[in-house]
Length: 244
Image 1: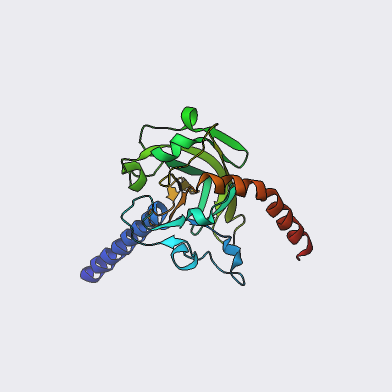
Image 2: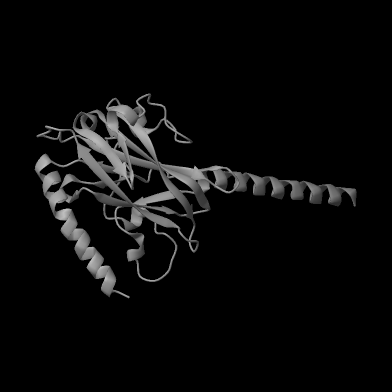
């Protein structure tokens, strides 16, 4: 009888230990944020957020460049400014979410400021060039690369898992080039990470295999896109007005 009791107690302890370990793992790393280069609502019918690796046409697998590997990469041929990226919470919630914008040396040579939403930050004055990642981000990929210049954080707000609302957010990013810039290096890049806190005050972030990089296009493409953006915005507004 005592033997059965001891075995039962040992089994209960084991189950509790596994449960606690699983909960901790999920809270620390199982919950995640996902980036997209297009609105994930484009999928037909209500469903959980899709894995960008399977859904986003701009997802790139393994690449020698740490700024590009296992990342959503928007090439210069598809680049516009201002441009939109989407961030979704695929598991748990992300409270006080921060968008971390990193740039390389080539980008810092030509960019004066980067505006996210209504907040603009000057590259020279407001970007952290220490190389120490903010929040729970590990010194991975871009932060370890020799071309890393610095990063800045922007507030995104609270996100929740589907079917919570809001579970994703469209983020408008605008870039201002330095006065007199006539040429953009072909290797200039802007990289995005994100993190927040769960209700249990545990970190949640995007997996390093699911981050986001923009390759900055030639200078002519930037000015052409900026000139046509107002027309595109007007078209989108009209289209939204007449759609149910």
